[in-house]
Image (cartoon, rainbow, N blue to C red; front, side, top):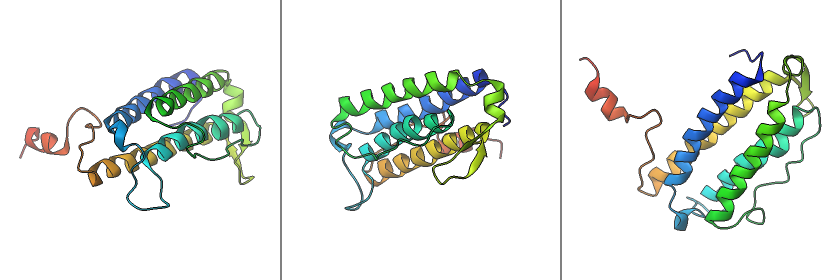
Length: 166
């Protein structure tokens, strides 16, 4: 996917984000701090991480500024309501920044936190891959808790198989 204008990318990213929202909504509020092992991300850590990294790393880097990412701990947002509010507000801030990117900005290079130059449009694609990776973690966590995650595209794999030609 070559990103030459920001509008279509923002529409695409909002569709990706909507699928992530559905998975987050499947985590019961009383289980948001669940993790499979001490010291590993909790569900809330993943949500805070997605919000913070989008706004304070990707959105800063595409402006050719250094990352401001300082972590994803509970001091940022604690409790389900604060968590989801944090997630949505940082996403809105990041989207405002992304919306200002011109075609010239998208084809220019920015620096990753590692100091590696990368085309801004490729950095935005990496952001989407990063989100999908962590959304997958949330699906696994739900399964480990004995809960169902939402079908990603409207049907479960079993439903697709049942509707497919043999």
